[in-house]
Image (cartoon, rainbow, N blue to C red; front, side, top):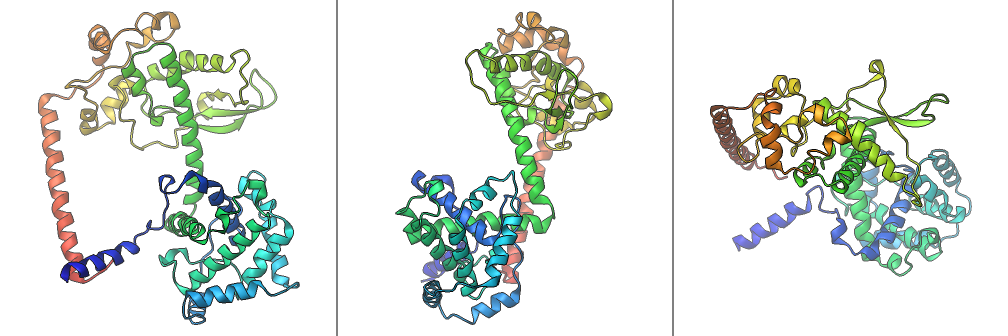
Amino acid sequence: MPESFAGLKKEKEKEKRANDWHLTKEEYPITWRITKKCLEIHVRALWCLPHQNAIPPKVSEGDIAFFANQFANESDIKTSVHSSLRRNVNNIRAVKDRITRLKASFSDSSLISVNISRIKEPLLEYMFEAVALAGLSRWSPDVLSQDPESMYNLLHEHVALATFMKVVKSGGYDFMAADYTLGQDFMVVRQLYRSFVFSYFKNMVRKEAKKPGAVIASRERDVVVKRMDNLGSNRVSILKAEGFRRELIKSQKEYECHSDDDEGDAGATGNVRGPVYYIREKEGRSSKYTNFYHQVIDTRVRQRSRKRGAHKKQTRPRLKPSAPQAQHSRFWGEPMPKDVFVDYFQPSFWNGEMTLEDQVSYIRDGELQIGMPPARFCESWEEIMKWKGLSQAQIQMTYGKEVLKDYHIPTPEEIKQVAENQNASSSSEEEEEEDTDLGDDDAGEVE
């Protein structure tokens, strides 16, 4: 009996976790993806959120309390919604106004706005009429409640799913190749709906509430990180194609190794015109690696994109701005790449700004290893050809002493002390966690 009670308590606690409604790509079949995309467009249209940075509005406690008293259970809601949708209502003034405001908020650069605009006007009116007939001034579920099955949230869910199924059946999402059969499967659509609303949007609302502007900043960061990752992938592909050793290739795979940039315009004069990316200064990276990429590897990346017969999407060139205009990376002060060699870092940065603990973390096989010879051997392809085929051991033996003379090398005593401090810190944190857990139990708080 106690075990059963404990299991029941554990199950209830599990239901309240933030991401219990989240579906990962591995948790649903690939055949659901189109239906998922259609439903997400449908939900955004009802919510009047026509682009990825649009934040759901707050829900008042009065609205929630009002609807909580209108229905006794989910069956009452379902019956009410479907009976309302069968009525023939042609003149709801608020519906027209709502649709007009939605269209006015469209973004020309947003695919979400484009897809919502492709929903036929009569079907869009039907969706908003359903919201009005349900007694809602606007469609706005309470995503922060962590309770999709409250009367208020169930009402929103049934309005969304009933109208979605109707729009799919009427061909409203044919432009997205909607699956008619799957679009009528209530249990499938409900799973997708709850994942989108009570996981994706809940996390978005929480992030924005904690720090206003965080959502837009996060989106902008994602775009920049994607460009950094693509830049790194292109460079690594050249390193592979030119036969560099695997240790150097692996060390440059992290996006953190590569510089970020800003969108800009070079104007209508000069050798480069029109839209460009202005390269930001990469914190801590040695000028040797920077020049190696900009002067040697990136030229090969550009040449590869000009292969005869290859059809490539037009890309913006990356330019290094003049000194007064150069800006620090937007990732300044964030963690450094983990798998790089010691000479990736400028000696002054390694010696003057990195902690001893940071330096120790870059020790490989008991020693600090280098990735490339001194800078004078990395400035032209002719010089690089002389060493790029050497093994890691040969690079270390031939050039290691000269390169490492500029870097502080942690002594065995320093390495031992860092390890002892880390172990002591880990033990202290474990004790604090145990004390915190006991405190929560004594207070009788249930999360």
